[in-house]
Amino acid sequence: MSITVAKSAGFCFGVNRAINIVNSLLDKNVKVSTLGPIIHNMEVVNELESRGCKAVDNIDEVEKDATLVIRSHGVPKYVIDKLDENGVKYEDATCPFVKKIHNIVANPDNKDGIVLIAGNSIHPEVEGIIGHCSTECHTFKNSEEIDEIYNIVLKKNNKQVFVVAQTTFDTKEWKKCVKKIKKLCTNAKIFDTICNATSMRQQETRKLAAENDVMIVIGGRHSSNTAKLFDVCKEECGRAYLIETAAELTGAMFDKCRSAGVVAGASTPAGIIKEVIKTMSENLQPVEEQTEVKESVQKSFEEMTDEELLELIDFREKRPIPFSSARVCWAGRRSG
Image (cartoon, rainbow, N blue to C red; front, side, top):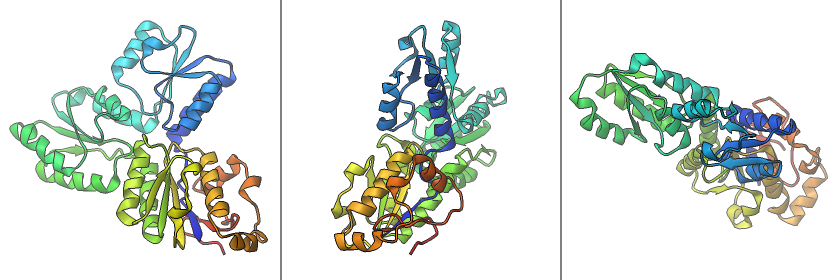
């Protein structure tokens, strides 16, 4: 069985930045709180908690001597206003790509228009975007819901329409929505605010899923971008599995499988990806295959550090390394 790992697997820029901010504060012995889990990965959250980082549900729970870190999803404007008003110390780890959306929808020039937001209305990122809108706003998850908004709201007036998208919105669905909006609202100003890393991740996932017998998606079950990757895999591959850790892998997943693809959400740390591939390549192969191929292993996962793995998946061109019993390569390449 060959294993192909997506080059885009693992932490995105925004998540990595947020984690670094928290770790930097903890390294300075600062008492840290986060507004909700810093990322959708309980292993990372638990590790940070063991170092003294406490996740809270609202800002009233923040202790007086603690610094609050706003996670990469961002928050509504009223939260920032309340933090300033109450004199709470905080670090804003909102992803710059999310900040860009906040600036678009908060523009005072939009106050006489209508903002349409592509995304899940109860997702923290979208709640934050809504909380920065300077005018009336509506959310939609697909092109069908655009028809509903048009018939109920847009058809009645000629207000300027502004359109943005959650950074992790499905790129394929976004294209359908843009086409529909352009047809219904010829004056609409459309901002493609889907994160470039999200677009690349989804495109790479779609390609891998079409090329492999089995797809393994690694990420938190509450992670929006991981859910999107899983949906893409199911569209292109009949056997797709969403797991959070290597412990969820079973041999039955790879029955009669000749090739498997591995992708990971933006909140999945390198260590978990490492363990999943190690399990797939060492524990899910016949013993005779393991013995035969292990003789030619250049470097095993046991010898690799998380940093080395990150280098391999961080959009860099590297020679593929055959790990353990399986042939492991990075997307678009094969190792013998």
